Each structure stands twice: as structure tokens, then as C-alpha cells.
Image (cartoon, rainbow, N blue to C red; front, side):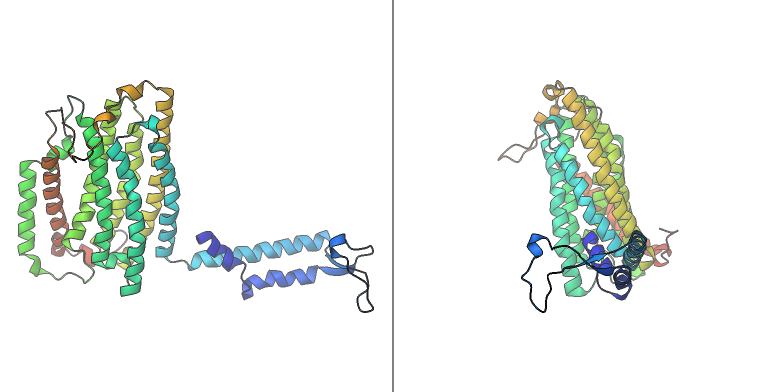
Length: 386
């Protein structure tokens, strides 16, 4: 769509774009064609219309001058159009373009040879639901309120919740695959964050900050607690997914899964940009974060696609990995909705895992939402501060 807009603007008959076309008339000279016209152009002679055709011809020097003027005018129109785009429009272009490499990533991830965990593979595909839900949500925010989606909390949080669901599917899919192998346990980061002490601290912080919320007034576009929880959970779940993908490389026998962990890193950085932007209450002074988020999304799509291709390439070269893959235990049980039995004693059950994750997200979200009211930084937005 951006390319079509550029072309439309560059070749419209506006004053700047019309100058090179007017120059064509100066460099072209009508000359009479001495011979008969080609068959499709012949017509019956008449008194008013002699059987002689007119052709437009130009000498090489004039043609070169014409080409230079056309190129200069077209480039000027394109440059003018690009310079008129807002940061939001630039970011929207990057987000739209990012869909294409992501589809390439899904293509290679879904190959049977890749042996991706069934639920994890579904989770990566479910991200498309988030993408297509966000589009009408953004349109509704503009049409109904005249605001960006980030400033309409109920639309913002509702659409972003699909991203959180995406991450949960990915985490559970890879966690089930890893849980099917003895000797594996939940990672150190998860143990630290969801330990009883950490959970108690998070719940205590929630109560403290909730009680003291009246000490400062939030801006009208501040994110609600549920919307903050969606964002914080997405960051934590994505980190957990990265760690589980790394460990899946060890249990699957395909070391190139570790490359996907690195490929997922730009996505996490993109999410940090979004959270930082909301931390400053979507201030215009830090709007550049939205553009950086869009660029990192494109980079993440490309790095994940390349990583998935390398996983597929290694799997094709080593077909014996298919029989040793633990993914057979990673798919959800049809009809029952129950997770497969976890043979590793070091891994919590899914209910316990998700409960601790919920408490962690609740405490972290409350800490960000109300904790920032105790400092001046969010109310003095700047790019260096961000």
C-alpha cells in the first residue's frame, strides 16, 4: 500500500510532477512520416485527412535531457512524499511489511521435518489472530474516539490479550515437550521469579501500591491494571518461551533450535519499546519508540524465519532425528483437554506453573502502574530518559 501511495503521488499531475511532463513537449518535435502507416493505423484518405501519419521523434541529446528532468521530478515527488509521513505512518508501514517474513517463518516452522511441538507451532500461528484483531480495533479507536489504539484502554487491552494467549500457547507447547524427558526441570529464571518469597513480595507490593494510589493522579490515557497485566505477561512469557526453545534444542537433538532463541530476541526488544512507550503515558516526545518497535518487529520476523529455515535444513540432513523427537508427547489430548503426564520431577504441574505466573504478572503490573506515580520520570518524557 505504501508503494502504491508513493507511485500515485509521484505521478499525479501536481505542479512539481507536471514540470518534467511539460519538458517533454519542448524536447519532442513533430516530424512527418514519409511512408505509409502500419496496417492497424491506416485509414481511408479524405480531403481533410491526407494519408500521412505524424510521429514524435527526439534526438539523443533531447532524450537525455528529458530523462534527467523526469528522473529529477519523480525523485523529488517521492522524497517529498516520504518526508511528509508521520512517525506513526512509518511505523505502520513496518508493521504491515513484517507480516510477509513472518509467513515465511511459519512455513518452515510447520514443515514436518522441523518437528516443532504441536501446541507451540499452533501458538506461533495464533499470532495472526492478534494481528487481524488489532486492525479493526485501531480503526474503531480512530472512528469512535479520534485517538490512537494505545490511548483507548478497553480496545487496547482487548486486542493485546490475544498476544498474551499466543505466548501462553508457545510456552505450554515447548514446556510439554521438554517435560517429556527425564532430568529436566523448570529453569532458574522461572524458579527465582515464582518462588514463594518472590510471590509473597509481589502480592505485598500489589496491596501496598493499591492502597496508596490516591497519592498521585494518573493521566486519562493511563493503562488499566488488566491492560498492564497483558503487556507484562507477554514480556515474561516470551522470555520463558525463549528459554524453553533453547532447552528443546537439547532434548530434540537438533541444536539449531538454539538459533531460534536468538532470533526471538528482537521481538522481546520490540515489546520493551511498547512497554516503555506506555510507561511514559504514550507521550509524543517518545513516539520514536513506536517506530523502533516496528523496525525491531521486521528484524525479529526475518531472524526467526532464518532460524526456522536452518532448523528445517538440519532436520532434512539428519532424518534420524524424527524418531527421537519428544514432540509426540507435546500435543494436547484430544477431547480431554488435559496436558500429558510430566515425567520430570523438577517441573511443576501446569496449574501450579500458570498460577505462579499469574501472581507474578499481577504483582509486576501493579508495581509498574502505581509505582511510577511515586517518581517524576514518567511525567518528563524524553528520548534519553526512554
